[in-house]
Each structure stands twice: as structure tokens, then as C-alpha cells.
Length: 436
Ligand SMILES: Cc1cc2nc3c(=O)[nH]c(=O)nc-3n(C[C@H](O)[C@H](O)[C@H](O)COP(=O)(O)OP(=O)(O)OC[C@H]3O[C@@H](n4cnc5c(N)ncnc54)[C@H](O)[C@@H]3O)c2cc1C
Image (tube, rainbow, N blue to C red; front, top):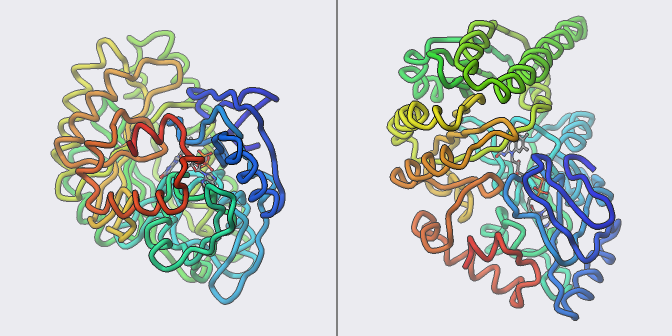
């Protein structure tokens, strides 16, 4: 299974910071099996959790009850016009490939594509683009299993609210998504002075389809990515160029960067120097490739991450405060991982991090095995002051009472959860903390 590793009794997420010991782990292949599993567990008071690819940093997918691994429930069921219906455990990667064969694509994707469709949409997974939304916005129909084991076809209101369901609003069985005609992307990646990036990012977000940047702490350089959608791409001959670009990305982002992280963990005093060296090594790249190849790249260097969405107008202040915080915490907790900044248009999904407002996402990380608590607590208090909302699948320390304040439609979600799971079959300690 992708990311999630398991033996008979324990499950660990991709980052290795969450561990579960379920009573039972099972890998169903049909909807009837899914419904029977939930019904049987609920009858004896056991909790149930579906897991996707285990790529959440939080304990959102962990359970001490029945763990349902959906990696074998992973087929495309139907493609009709621009709509595709899939079983919940299909990965974004597998879906993207099958859509490409049908001349279709998902409208937007995040940095990786190994997550399952159900796992990604349940936590509000997103990419970048002011004119675009998170993956869950593409959902047009859901069939789910209720906490009592009944198969439910979501009505219009359940669908509006339940597209980002945190694994609490039913166990998703099949999902229908509205796709777009397959498209290409013209990608431009270049290192620029951080001050110029801070100055230019708002405008680039408006004129470029998908803009984002990575800032390496301890340096004054950022790597800017600006991707523009195109209906057609270059001829087959350029495939070799794409392969060589991917190889170059693999060497810098995984092999070289991984080595730097390992040295930095052993010799924190070298981190600022190495960070400066890395920033100098960022080269300019320009290429055109099918959309899903540009959106997602493999992430082999393991890290722990927190990501916050703030109202778009607040991002510069929030970023400046994080920059100042790094100067304070890095003596005790050296930071050798970049900060990623992305943008997204506001949507109408109650539990989406971009619900009701255009948002900028600021993600902070540290290499796995290095301290991050003081850094992340500091970032969280900055983000709270700016009305920030944490990514449900990434580290945060918030609880129900103060999360409700930043989600105007919090109660609508509570009502849906009460309808679909009145006895709390899909609850776990993480959901109890954030939902109350
Ligand atoms: C290297 C890396 C890169 C990442 N990049 C991004 C990014 O670019 N953008 C972004 O927004 N996030 C990103 N994430 C976070 C990731 O997309 C989310 O945490 C996502 O939820 C993981 O999907 P998964 O399939 O692994 O789900 P899991 O982590 O296994 O589960 C997530 C939630 O979905 C629930 N779930 C799974 N299947 C079902 C089902 N059938 N019915 C109901 N609930 C279900 C689980 O119970 C749990 O609540 C990244 C994470 C990593 C490790």
C-alpha cells in the first residue's frame, strides 16, 4: 500500500509520526463488504476508519477499532461525458492516467498524486491557482455507508456539505467527479530574490494559472513556479526532454536535497551555509508536459508538515512574522526545509480551508527526526491571529471551540455528521478533539 505501511497489528503513516494498533484490519473489494463491515462493527460498538494512502500527518486516519484499507477498492466504474465515477480507494495517479486515456483530466492537483481520491478530498487537499479550487470541488455525487451500515446516496445538501468530510461524514464508497478536457502545462521554474517574490506574488497569482513559491529559510532566495494551462502540447519528440527534466528534478529535490537534510540533522550549524548553497543551485527550467505530470512530483525525503490557509489579504504579514519567528527558534530548532506558499480561490464547501474566501496557504516543514514543536506552535499562533485555518491532514494543535470560530458553516457540518453517524462509529481521538 502506498505510504501506509502495516503488518497484522500496526499501521504507520507515510511520515512515520502516527501509529495505530487496530483490533482488525481488512481490505474489502465490494460495496456490500464495506456496508457489512460497518454494520457488524457498529453492532458491537467498535469504531471504524477507512484509510487511504496514509499521507496525512495528523492522526485523522488512525483507529484502535476496525481499519478498512481501501487500496483494493480502486476501480474506475464509469466515464460519461466529462464525469468519472470511481471507487473511493483509487489513487489520484491511477485516476489521472486513466482519465488521460479518455482525453480528460482533473481540474487541479496538489504536489503529489499518490493519495486516494477519498483520502485527498476528505481533508480538503489542494494545489495552487487563484482561479481554481481544491480537488473536492470537482465532486458531483457521493455514495457512502452510514455509521449504521446503510448505503446512502448523498442528496444536494449532503453533497454540498460532505465533499470535505474529514472521514466523519460517512464512509465514502463511490465518488463522481467533474473533469475537464485533458490539457498541457507550460511550466517555468526560476530562482528569484525573495523580496521580489514577496512583491510580485499577488500579481502573478492573478495573471498565471498556477503560481507558487518555495522559500528556503536562512536565505534571501525563493524558487518560483509559474504554470500556464495549454490546450495542446509539443510533439512526441519532446518526451525525451521531459524525461530529462524529471531526472533533474529527482536529483535536486530528492537525492541532493535529501543528502543536505541528513547532513543538516547531524550538523545543524551547517544548515544556513548549505541552504545558501542549495538556493544558489536552483536553476531555471522551462518545459511543457501533460497537466498531471507537471502538478505532481515524487517526494522521497520524509518530513513533518503544518499548513495554514489565511485570507489572501493577510498572507504577507503572516509570512513576515513566520520569517521573524525562524530567526528566533532556529537556534534551538534548526530548520532545514523550505516554506511553500500557494494560493486558491474561495469555494462553498463548509469544511474546506478556502471556504468563502480567497486564500493563501503557507506550509512549514522540518526534516523527519528533527525538532519542530516550538516552530509549529509559533507558526500556529501567528496564523490564529490572521484568522488561519489548518489543513486537516497536516500537523496542528487546534480544538473544536476555536476552530468553529473560523468556519462560518461549522454547524452545517455538525448536522451532517449527526445524520450520517449518530453513534460516532467513524470517530477517533483526533476527530473528537477537532469536532468536540
Ligand atoms: C509528501 C506529501 C505531500 C503532500 N502534498 C499535499 C498537497 O500538495 N496539497 C495538500 O492539500 N495536501 C498535501 N498532502 C496531504 C495529503 O494530501 C492529505 O493528508 C490526504 O488526506 C492524504 O490522502 P490519503 O489517501 O493518504 O488519506 P489518509 O491520510 O489515509 O486519510 C485521510 C482521511 O481520509 C479519510 N478517508 C480515507 N478514505 C475514506 C473513505 N473511503 N471514506 C471516508 N473517509 C475516508 C481517512 O479516514 C482520513 O480521515 C501531502 C502529504 C504528504 C505526505
